[in-house]
Length: 580
Image 1 (cartoon, rainbow, N blue to C red):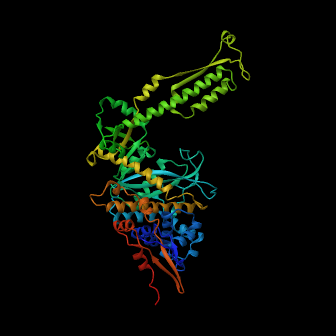
Image 2: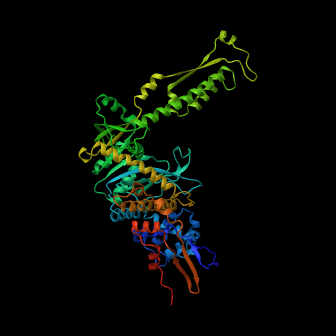
Image 3: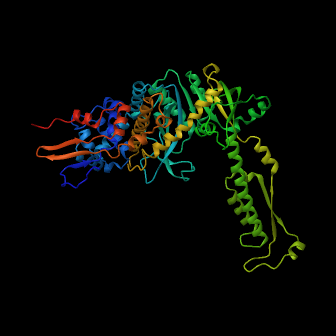
């Protein structure tokens, strides 16, 4: 048994180096500082380059998102000031603000340069791109925010310093955004393959604009700065329009886009009896597990059928040949019917309550008040259209036969009657579980089954957006200048690329016989493994002496798999030897 005893107090100071052990080598290999400095030459009078300061800011967001005013304090506690060679007192709001101002003027170009370097350095194919916009909410007043000119106009594509920041303004309410909330929209282009998602490029639009504007501007910027030779963009129904398909077609690119069902329901009805359905090979991870484990839980699947079709762009009258892929999901069918029945049950219960209230002569049971109550009950619920109601006046004979009203009530003058339209319900059930995709890809480029499988990777975009707004924490944003807000958002896009690149590097290095869990290792797991790693600082007469501590077996394994140097190797190269 090993002996443990208490020793004398040490004069050493500890620095929680933590995840910087992997963050710093990652940013070095991405050449973040070098790329920024190439676009933003430093003022000869400046103590530190823009790339040095902004790469430190990216590291801060990856390590632990904090307000800009707290970064100096964090740098002192973590040893970042030593690693980046910037004294703590120099890490102030003014310096970060000036660097963000400079970054704003080259934001698209820097983001594109990082994307191209990452694709080349880490063998990422920039051919199939998933696009998905999301919103970022703001609080406070942004008087400087104003509508801006679009990206595309007068035969040019505006970007960098020729494009104002997106307007922080009231946008459409959603499940996680109250009506009238201040916001901007951020669209991210993400590559998805067997190693997971990797966001590479993005753009912002005004808070009151929609997906049609977002995808049009994103494509223009993508083509200008990344100059792809071949490209297929996958996106959801909010971005679908014939104009979107036309823009891609005119550049010899392709689109795969989820489409609003109501626009293709007539085509579905026209061909429904002749459609040839085939079961899709795509299965969710959960459904694959159920089949592998021979689970008793429901086994769901997708079925696909395709129709050749031609769309016409109203603006140019140009014809767009395409394929419409009709999709049937057994899981979606069940979910839709369960949600509808739940909604019907609540509406029926509410109407029955109003019916009893009217019959009892309670307050607010006159015709106008009842109409307001029903309107409130129905709201925007889709199932409301199955119910029809009316206030039927009571005859004199019916009124005379009523019992004496209870205290506080009055004798009713009407009867509340409602009916349920079973026929309309059955008609709607015929379309439960169906959806439509539109693709302009030629048949020789891929089967319907392979296209659908790639499209389902769109689910990873939600994960990317969650990380962008969660662990990387674009919010809270304390900057009052819309220019600096936009610059910070673009800087977070670089951080997002770094975040997902880390797990990609690890997964790519996994041996062929690696366990499934090892192949799905996440950045969060990697960063957490270094939470306990510290540096020791000794105060000497001539300055500070930095000592690295011993890595755990797991930490050393992670660095070896990633191909990163150890903290000892990094610091021994960056810091001078002690004076003799």
